[in-house]
Image (cartoon, rainbow, N blue to C red):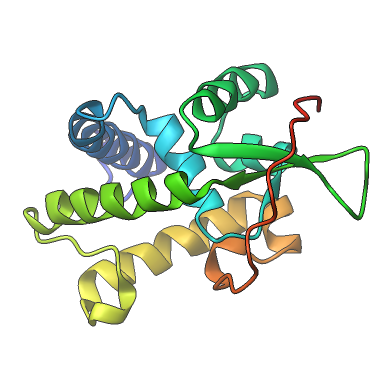
Length: 174
């Protein structure tokens, strides 16, 4: 820790430690269902029902494309995710949750929220928990400042999905 309170090294150390501890806690919750934190990130992104290009899923899940392909293959094998050619750009593949994937995400989301509630953390800003909402807003602001690509396009996670999920396609190519 630095001799100067609030030094950049303190911010990096604190964020890294918090992320590792939170990942360890949530990893234990997800392990009962043989899911990893990375798989959870993918399910959460796809839960908006819009379908997302694999390149976007890779960036949001912080996974290299090859690793993401293997992970999505596993989720497809478990009937949680399906892939489909993007109707607007046939060169791209979009990933979606299956009906089973939506049910599993909802069930796991309840378990994750319960685990966080034990710590007094509510990820739902609408529950009027000012401290948690302030932390989430501050972290989102930091991410926006550090990630130029995110500044260019608003996060798709903020928009509520109202589109129906398209029928699955057998295609697997990217």
